[in-house]
Image 1 (cartoon, helix red, strand yellow):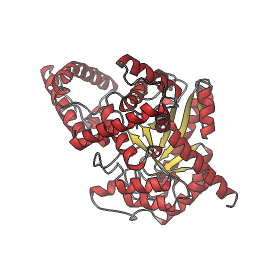
Image 2 (tube, rainbow, N blue to C red):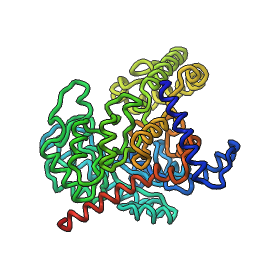
Image 3 (spheres, rainbow, N blue to C red):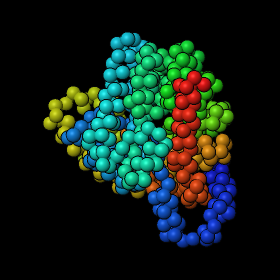
Image 4 (tube, rainbow, N blue to C red):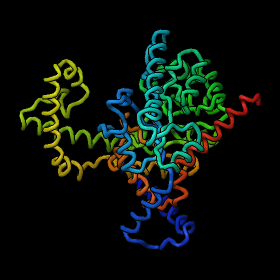
Length: 448
């Protein structure tokens, strides 16, 4: 770990601890570990925990296979209930495709399929356990009724096509935030991925993108700056009449990745009144640490596979290169391979724990909260929130699925954050922005 990060953690934790001591009357100056954990559990139960980015597959929203079951994915109702995650923003995501009428039409259809899937879960499959929220008041009402809350975010405006009327349609379907690009330049904005080759399509926002900002303001959709380029984000914040969010990004000053926000963007976001939802995505949290752990773990897995005379598709550790070979197998061959690989992984797990973790530990909750600490110190607690990117690549040791959500609250308590501050980080800040965005929309719609 960078020593400056470690020092920042200590200094900020000490400062927040002092705030906690003065803000929480009756809190003892010292407490045992059991007392600290019990206090954290109480806080976790009382605050509304809200995760702004959970990817979904429409295949998991059918009568036969749905979120009432523990499907083995990172977010579903059993895991939310086990971990005390109250609000899941389910994501209508479509990957970037060709900027053609056919590409747009296909993307719109895929988006509507995901909208329909979320409505099916909340209205037909499990309305007694989870309900769709459209406002902050809905969130609080549903939570008070003892049910889980679903909200809808839209990742990549590619699926809007060139018909801006689709923005209103998506809002009416329940969409409450949208990013103008993803991994690739869209018709609306450049992506952060342009940093790889220095090739840009719009040098920020396109003219259509500028118009889209106005439509999003009008219909109460929060502008999400997590995936577009720096120039696109700065232009979006300058244009938007309402605060923006970064639905799943961390601090570039802590880990230099183009998906994280640098200090220029953070200061513009603070001025805009928005919020950055810190993301627990290992390679965005600490890239060097994540790479070291993965490489060492893959080497152990490869060695174990060799000892077991098992050929791992895609080379060391079973990487993406094996997907094509796996897809070419018959169902019987695929099942046999997956069972064999599971045996290899099981055998390798103990060696990874004993040989790799002590030397090259994985990215964990403490590393994640380092980003929260930095962001709080840089732009103020009222502009910081929490997200996971679960089922889209996110997760760190200690918060690798919704069932482990308490560990985030526990680490915040260890750092000295008060209950009020933790409530703001988990949901208060994001819901405040949603309220402001919807107030701006009401003003615009009334002719203001």
